[in-house]
Amino acid sequence: MKCTIGVAVATGLWIAGALSAQAAAPAPGAASARAATTAVPLTAHSLAVAESTLHYCARVDVKAAVGLRGKIDAMLKGASAAQVTGLRATAEYRTTYEAVTHFVGQVDPHNATRPCDELLAARR
Image 1 (tube, rainbow, N blue to C red):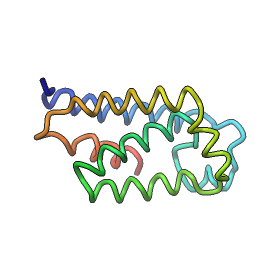
Image 2: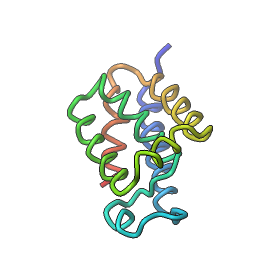
Image 3: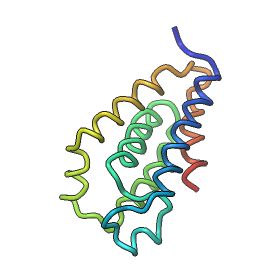
């Protein structure tokens, strides 16, 4: 059974809240140049939320997916490939990615683009 608009809104609020909390917390060891270019620090959690949502949006809203890809690229700016690989290898990344994937997978088809729109709005 697919969920209704309430879940779509809750999804967006959950994602936005997760990103807001990440933005409010200082990123340990974050490069000041990267921190100045994005409001969301690069952490395993923020990367997993963004990439999981991107994977979902690529199937339901290509335009939003392009926008999210740009936001992820900005988040990754200044990070080495080894740092990104290391973040993706963490349990926190995998757990968060799976949780977001499960959550957005329950969104009713007629509200499918809501999580994409909400994440784009939260990252501006």
